Image 1 (cartoon, rainbow, N blue to C red):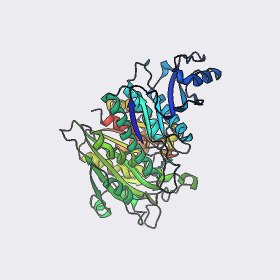
Image 2: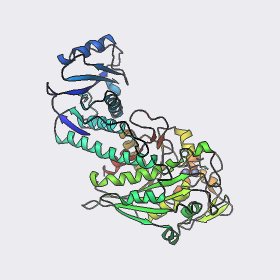
Image 3: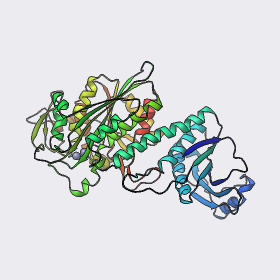
Image 4: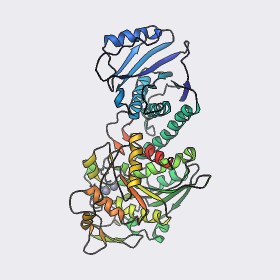
Length: 489
Ligand code: BES
Ligand code: ZN
Ligand code: ZN
């Protein structure tokens, strides 16, 4: 699909679908479309008949009654212009894509920029719309043919300047990252084992990847990571590191650490079958990290970025760790494993230790870590914890701007008591409520004094329903937000 800009739609352009966004004044009154060009006469009268007020999420698809060049017109209401956010444009883009596909469009145009809004540039609006348009059309086609793609071009009205052109390019690059993350998550665990994550990391452009095998992991004494991996002799673990360096001197060094449990059966503290159905997604954090790394050579940030993934399954063969076993993490901390289903933090403990030894300025981990985070924040928000207010604030801003929503949660010192073990330095589960926070506190033992943020993406990494620009399955959450963060330095 090609994305174009044009300053004005030529009168003779042959189009299957033309998209118009509109805002309301919030009064709920029928909107006057008297300013629509004469060729949309049929549209204007239809909108009037339907008392179209441009309310948020409203849409009207109209057959442009016999017009010789424009087959259909889609009018999208964005709601009260005072409440407009970029997310409205992403959702408009998603609705546009679905309608365009439904009527088998080939060439689509859009007049979507709202001039009245002062908060967002034309470029921001164009970028958001294109993101929604691309992401809503994602299909996972590895095992089943997708519906045939008919759309060849989307041409948006806007100044053909470099700002707007770059906005389109940026949207395309970011969505390439998001779609890779979705592919990685959607691939069943049988075909997305630790070795496959390593292959994905090795295939990246502009990134140096190093993969450590089981023997190397043992040599590095990653005992916490290994305690999880030992029950999965059939699919051995890999420790993956990826490095991106900018051409000029790096302003900062950022470490991204992703949970890469390619299947979480729970181990001997086994999950009920319902709880296991979606556990191929337990590598969602690593999917986001690998996908961000995959687009860095196009985003060209001024920072050095390293990605780390301790990839393993959490399985139950005869070598599996038992509840009550004690392991020794890479940094010497002993951990009593009372619940083998709290495995993510065990893999992350050593990944964080490893990442931290490279002395990054900032360390951010992403993990589908706790069911409790889903209970607390639902499917739309990631839990955000950490030890540095400025970093937390920055991530929050990037999340708000991109629609990868996060909510700041505390790391209450007084809950550390819950992680005390009578026979080891730590135990791997808390003793009460607040499971997301005790998981975060557990991780804090492995980050030293480095500025660190932890994102529990258990909710947003996956959706059973889809909707908007999300499609059923993996979402690629936080790819766009953290890319924004990385390019902001
Ligand atoms: N991978 C799960 C968390 C999860 C659950 C992610 C549902 C997405 C959806 C994690 O490894 C886990 O099982 N956590 C346990 C921790 C508990 C044993 C302290 C949980 O949340 O139940
Ligand atoms: Zn688990
Ligand atoms: Zn897990």
